[in-house]
Amino acid sequence: MSATSAVPPASLALEAEAERLFRALLNVDCEPGRTWDLAGCRRIAPLTLEINRLKKEKDAVILTHSYVEPEIIYGVGDFKGDSYFLSLKARESRAKMIVFAGVVFMAETAKILSPDATVVVPDRGSGCSLADSLTGDQLRQLKAAYPDAAVVCYINSTADVKAESDVCVTSGNVYDIIAQLPERRILFVPDRLMGQNIRDELKRRGVDKELITSDGTCIVHDVFDAASVTEARARFPGLKVVAHPECTPEVAAAADFVGSTGAMMKYVKGTVAPYFLMLTECGLVGRLQVEAPEKHFIGGCRLCPYMKLNSLEKVRDALLAPRPDQIVTLDEHLRRRAARSIERMFELAPRD
Ligand code: 13P
Ligand code: SF4
Image (cartoon, rainbow, N blue to C red; front, side):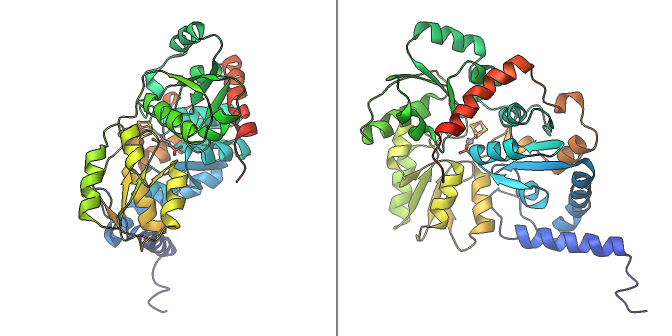
């Protein structure tokens, strides 16, 4: 008997899985204190193998936003990307179960678009400071004050807010969609800073719109400041600064590129520069370290506390036997109304 054939097949499978994880994650070092060596990958391999087996058994698909931990994205995820891409995948899905490793508003959107699937969230506490900033009742009051405005909601909003809106948008299609609306006055909710950035960008494009916004901000993006961009440029000649439109207008103006997480990834992959400063959540840097390991990133790391509530253990539990708090349920009348604003987004969004 050879030495290899003496090793039980289960151990071989575990070792192969640990090596697969290690090859995927070895370059990731965006989060202080978190790196993936072979020993660490051996520790999580039983869990990723179990989740990948359960996925088949349960006819499930796992959607992962780029901000969740890389061992979820590359260990067990079927699709990874930004809010728009993942909502398209949820809409196309024929799986019995959708596990959404992201935040609750994303899973709610998946349930709106795929009502026959069981949609689960690993952690019910994975909110979002934007989605949590505005209720349906508050939006109804705003609508009463601006009855002639088109109501545009950012996808980072609750199902109630989507149900009260004429059209939903994401950071990847917002300018093109608003530019097509016949109304001049736009009530954009719930991101005040993104509203200011939309106003500036539409002005640059020669589109005449009046924007009214509510007062939410993203707690991850609203703290980046333009002064540190100036300092970084002085220290790193040739630096390219990349920002999400949830940043302040001053930061957006100081950046070389502003876009959705998907557009930011595309920009970095297609741009030659000695260094990049990513003004967004740290997970996106992790994805780029995996998919564009030749690029160099400077700057600290900002974590979304909601996205980081996701873990492999919670994904496994949600797949195996979801607790009631992990299952997304929506009133059918509300779901249909919310679906209208999202379907309008798909009609108006530019085709890639
Ligand atoms: P994207 O749609 O650009 O991925 O943005 C989602 C988000 O929550 C950014 O903070
Ligand atoms: Fe919400 Fe900001 Fe977290 Fe995105 S990064 S989910 S906008 S809190």
